[in-house]
Image 1 (cartoon, helix red, strand yellow):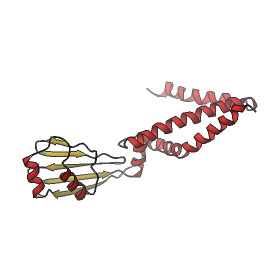
Image 2 (cartoon, rainbow, N blue to C red):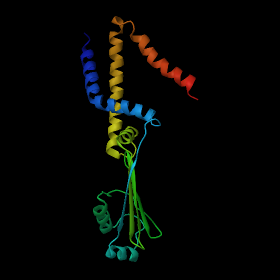
Image 3 (spheres, helix red, strand yellow):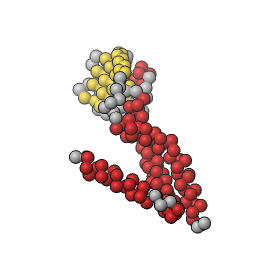
Image 4 (tube, rainbow, N blue to C red):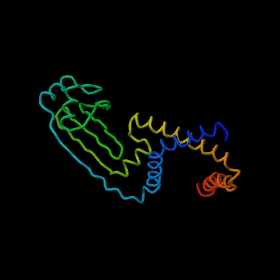
Amino acid sequence: MLPWLGTLRQWHWISSALCLVGMLLFSITGITLNHAAQIEAKPQVFNQQAQLPERLRVELQEKTPTQGLPLALRQWLEGELALRLDARSAEWSDAELYIGLPRPGGDAWLSLDIESGALEYESTDRGWIAYLNDLHKGRNTGSAWSWFIDVFAGLCVLFSLSGLLLLQRYAGARPSTWPLVALGLVLPALLALLFIN
């Protein structure tokens, strides 16, 4: 046995173990994304109205921010709506605050009128399939998930290349190896050329 073969096998099984759950997730969500039009979603919409405390309303009227969220306002919004607004961008225009709160599998927003103190909050949940599909796409998932996708993709490349080298090593004893590899290359190419406009 060649000395590098044991190392190659080790790289292959370690990368496959690290990729297993991610490959299952991305394979299943690949199917759900491909059939998104046939999967019926029933979004659940939650609305909430509230009134800004008079003290905060007066403070904001005296000095309306042009960007960011004053600490007292942020703390009140988080307490009133039971959510976190840490790094959310606040849009101020004509004495009105708007904050978009997109997330995987849903969306939310809040609007606050400084003159009247009226707060409106709406949250939409599109369900678990939409949540997993958004994880697949990296939509509104943040930097930690984005890093996970990149590392996972690198491990998949390592898994595939080490598998290809193992195929090369054992192809002599398995005559169907290279025709199957060729089919895996030619079939998607033909489908793309013949059936995709």
